[in-house]
Length: 384
Image (spheres, rainbow, N blue to C red):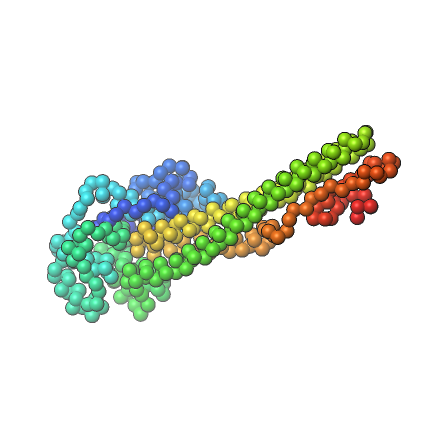
């Protein structure tokens, strides 16, 4: 499978606890079927999932779930699901596994695990690891210490460098914002600022947690706004029913012209209320759309932090951050320009005004509909 950087991905030597699917879409947005390892799940910039073959071969595609227009070049491998599927498959076959050293070419039996490099090490490599200046301060845990534990990092799918085929991408070049291998960091990325994968992951987790806090805040606001819209819709319906009753009582008192006027006023009332309810429904749909997008970002980012591996998180963090920033910007635009939220202090004021003793020759103009204490256009002069 190819990543956006051209790197090859493969299942590596370790497996851990199967990642839960909470927050991760397991169905393709195009074919609506559950993805599998053979379908090569892809992560869209909107954080939805698609089978590789289901994605149209076009420069831009539209997500059938959220209708976001996507640049095909921004679609990346869905490492979170790839790891989950591989982990589930491995655990179905065996509950335990012998690990080999990944630092040397002898494939000797591993006796320890470096939590900084994310490598299984044999005795010889552990000694060398503790002598080299760059790795002597790394934390190495023995297999006995890891007994009974299934760290998330042990179940991740490693990626291999496209240039140095045998080298895993275990470094993060901050200057280039990409995963690199040790050889690339010493050659193409020489003098660039870099971090070990685990350190970069912790840094990005902090940033994503900050982003999550903002998303939760926006979600709370959106939920409150939706509640206000729903409440206002209900209040308008109640007032519509009451005013309708008033108009009917008014119309019954008169004949012919009064009855005609009553029907006209009912139509005006319906038009006014329907217009306002349509506006509120439209606002509610926009808020619902924003809520769904924020919910998707929240679930996915939370899943990435709590259940995803270091590689998947760092590899996908741009997509996550970009989509979250896009949704927040979209929300600000909608709230500022198109989605005025009802003021909870502003009560619905729709009334029917009339004079029971008005002269018979003016019956045709009796009564009018007022909204917020203002008569609607076309009402008689006496009501203005």
